[in-house]
Image (cartoon, rainbow, N blue to C red):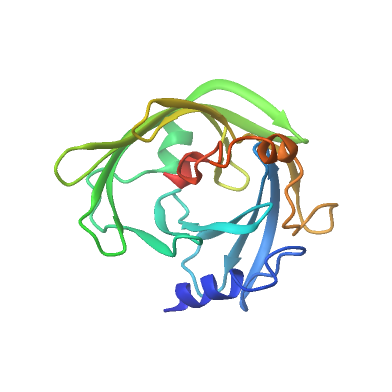
Length: 236
């Protein structure tokens, strides 16, 4: 119930301008990314320690909302336009582990997701540190390579992706990078890499207006060039 109320607040008329999280929550980071997207990350007092929310905005307003835990596990997500909710099914065969990725350099995972109460689909894949470190807008990040696939209850391949991402040990977050994504019609090249990070008190903090690649997006085909499912590891 609380998550539904959060979604209702964020998807309200004041969808553009300055981001205000729900009562009891605090924004800690705003990320401007390639592909005309800006994400506001926030935490809520009522959640388990380490849980983080992310609200994604394009030029039309908020389109995606998600929550991950301290290990980067998918907890719940909402596609605002479609009004759908996806949740992590308890009892994962091999839970995703941010701690294992940092400690061992690789994390394999296998878990299930359910959309609006439907039969669960299975996600299987891995993240691995490449050994390359990069600094974006003054923030040190570690590059990863990843690959995952999602199959339906009958074993049908639904989607798959591979490529590179970035992880921040400071924030315990994944950020998108250059990748390939296939939703059933062949692989599509994507790049939602972060460009600018803003913390409280810095220029651009809590904005809901994306600023990078937006002209290119507006002049492209009506279909978005970057499916929300492929934006980042925590958008599986």
